[in-house]
Length: 273
Image 1 (cartoon, one colour):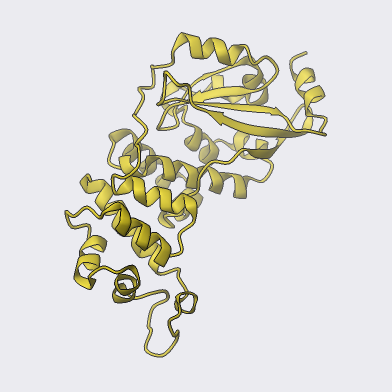
Image 2: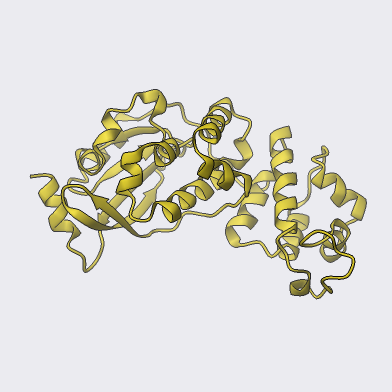
C-alpha cells in the first residue's frame, strides 16, 4: 500500500465508522457517547481484530490488512458493495486500473466511436480526461471541442461549465453521482500529480465539489436512464453505457443510446440534420 492509499483508507474507515448506528450492530446507543457512530474499540471487537491494530489502521500506519480483515470490516461498517470494493482496492486486494496518458487515444478506438453514428459517445482516461468523441456527442455538448485539452476533464466540466449544468437533467444528483464514481476509481491513485491537481482545482472552484469530496462517499457505475435538457430539442432520455476496450484497459468508452419507449432517437436524428 502506498502512503496515499493508507491515508485514504484511514479517512474512509473513520467516515464510515461515524455513520453506523450502534443499534444496527446490536450495541446500545446514547449514554456516554459524545460522537455519532461506533467507537474504534467496538469496530475492532465486532471485526475480530485488536483494538490497537485497528487504531493503527485508522492512523494510516504502515500495515496491510488481509482480505479477510477487510471483508470483516466491511461487514461491521455495513458497507455497500461499492464501498467494499473500494476498500479492497485501497488495501491492495483489487486490480488497479492503469493510468493512461492524455494523448494515448488509439486510432482504432476513435474509429469505433465514430461508427456509433447517432449515438453520442466519448472516451475518457483513468483520470477522466476526455480524449475522444464522435460528432453525435459534439452535437449533444458542443462545448467539448472548444475547451482546451488541459481543461477537458469530465469531472471538471460537470462542476465548472454552466452549459453542462444546464444540460444535465438533475445537476445536483448527477454531479454527485459523477463525483462518487470518480473517487471509487481513483482512490488508490489519489497521490498521482494529475489527480492531486484536479482535486485542488475543483475544491477551489466549486463548494459543491468540496463538500462532496469531504464526505468520502463512493459508488460504482451502473447503466441506466439519464435525462438531458438540450437547448435545441428539449428533453432527451438516453440510456448510459460504459465499456472498456480489451486492448486499452486504461480507457473507458461511454455511449448514450435512445431510451426504450422515448422519442430520443428522433431528437438525436434532428440534431444531426
